[in-house]
Length: 158
Image 1: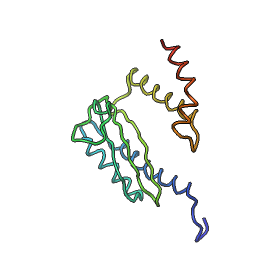
Image 2: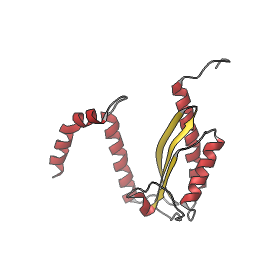
Image 3: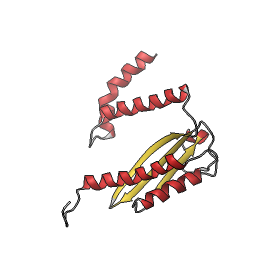
Image 4: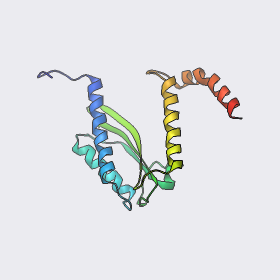
């Protein structure tokens, strides 16, 4: 980049994503069985600030039975082996851009067949959503576009 050249917005947004990824990378590297949800949040935010994040606006850190129904907070509950750890870094800010996305990890073990099946179901649901949405789509237009699909899938599952 030449001196004085301004980066385009999409590049700045990518930088914000990289900063958030630094937080998730630190969690992946440092999370241990017995660690508390609070500790996981501390690991993540430290890495985000060290990578250049300006501030964060909210968190969701849940493990085990606290992942469903989802609790929009975190606790001093210790992480146990073979449970899911769900993280959401809400609005990590970088140069006016806000990055918010979730990651789910499995604590201290390889996944069971049921956990693999649950994960695969989530991946398929996301793929279906992505296939019917596009930039600028609105919830009502998605609903109208997919009403025929809903009726067909309900009939076939009965």
